[in-house]
Length: 263
Picture 1: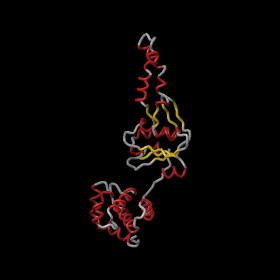
Picture 2: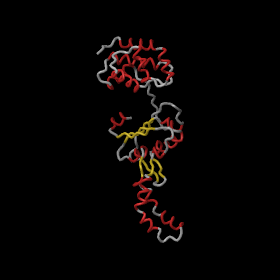
Picture 3: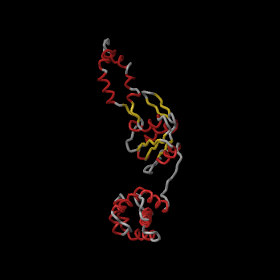
Picture 4: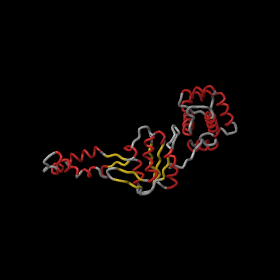
């Protein structure tokens, strides 16, 4: 999403999904503290409005005529979805890890994706000034609803080939020795071939490489791998499985680094 925004010359707006995410956090909410402050500051004006009221019902009707003033743009807090639709310039909208949100939230997204608009009861329908480029990501922790799938183009991103992952390491960690980079990528690739609960992602490959550099390590040995496995594997069961095959994992790393220069 960041690369797309940079390539298109657009701003990036990100919505991080999580369990329990609702419209107030994704779309908009009213600034109730500000509304209360204005109510206090304008209490004399409110008193004048209801001065001639003969009953509570009459007073309520008199105030109701002014309530729209408190539900206006002045008190509206735009969250990521609304900010993307109202942006005066085209933007890229990243809805990250949509599968972590509840299915009900996906239903709410349908109006945004289908019509590029949202409805705010107090203000009406807000249509996109410039339809954003919307990117949704999912880690497949649960299946997306069919209604949401129909409105998306799907692209599956697999792990990169070893040569590309080595190149990524060299960009992320300039100066890393080619031999160590090749060993790291081969070790992580062998881990991914195992039946793990959570295989290491590219970000964890980079974190592990950074940790090895900080520790001053120039090669992967069984001791080094055992002491730093926690950077790659986040579940104890996965770590136990990896430690049982540590010898084979290290040998795969050594073979990959054999043809690379040390510096």
